[in-house]
Image (cartoon, rainbow, N blue to C red; front, side, top):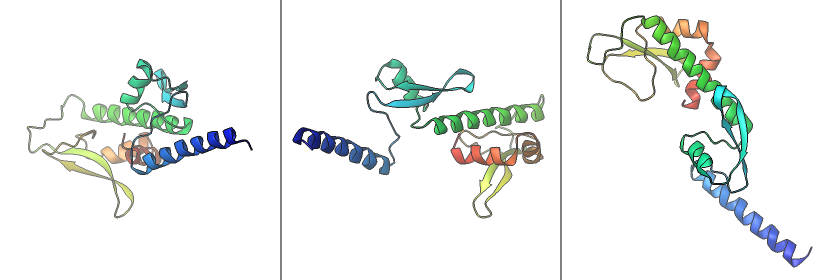
Length: 162
């Protein structure tokens, strides 16, 4: 090997080490210039682009729509679809009655994963609204969601944080 080749390898390894250090720190992955990344496009398809640090790249990244692998983007697309289906079900079950956060006696049901029993569960609140949670006024919300959407898809969506 020539000295120039060794220097190039050394530089590449240094960049790779820096990437691994950043991943360990919990930083969100961001592609380097020229690096390929994946995104969820219109109608849920997965697209592939090369990072050029242009407006479009920055926008997709700022929206959390920039993934290292095609599989990550596909999972995001599926989880967004599942969440939309769950929201539509809640709206259907709620009918003409709105979720009213000023009504302290109105039970608002939601889904969660109980880590103690590792199971999809449901509960309700009256006045404490959580960020990003879908609420339904029907006490059978969990059973109907499992029937229509499927337990595994719901668990996957909740685990993803979507």
